[in-house]
Image (cartoon, rainbow, N blue to C red; front, top):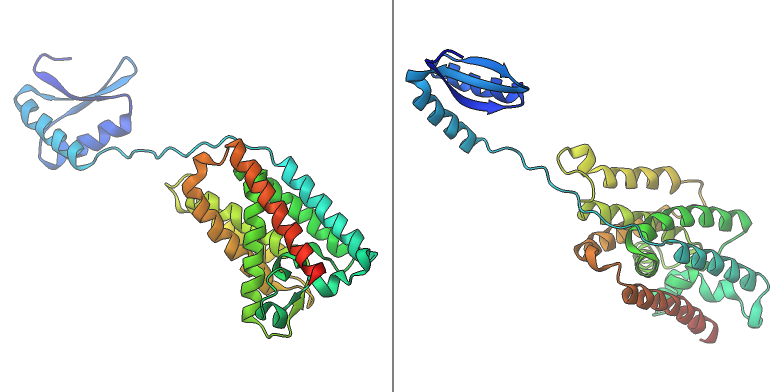
Length: 292
């Protein structure tokens, strides 16, 4: 390099050097870009070096490098216990309701009934989640419940995930009932299935578990959740679309709130306590329904 030239900027990136060369061009300072040993240097005549260095300092001060946000890392948790409990619960209730165990009308006692829920029979918002009209209805909810429950359990742990799914699904059934006529009746775990989907979408979105630098990644969980809701949550005239939507929205809200505590979810005591609470909710709801 000629002795009357001074290095005012050095960077391995040619693009970075070119950007700063534009700064020098705008103020009339001659320059040259030199590649040297795998790096790129910006040089100017010695008499311009002080001014060039100051202009580049001001440029860097006004244009700080973008800091890539680090995506939180969560260790995947064991989703199998929750999925197994879901499968066993739905199949067990289906069998007991089908054979009328304890001499009870399980469908009459446990289904969503708008008038009765408005009169205080809150347990129906939970018991209805475990009742199904026929084998295909049960099979569909088992498949999608296991799929979305797997995602939720891996993120939140089996206990916390399924406790929140039950609570959000019950809230979804309540909201749907209040929005419809008192004569509305329904059964099925689909509200819980879409509560699980909403839970995952809300947790991932609010917890910023995906890149936030580009809007498709930032809003991906929300768009993906609604796409799955539209694809799997609509059907024939027997499909309770309102319950699917309210279940998804309640789950999304629950996941968004829970994301504030994401780093404490792996605690074994919390997962066990949440699992016990989930079992107690379903068991208590059915005990109440069959003894009222």
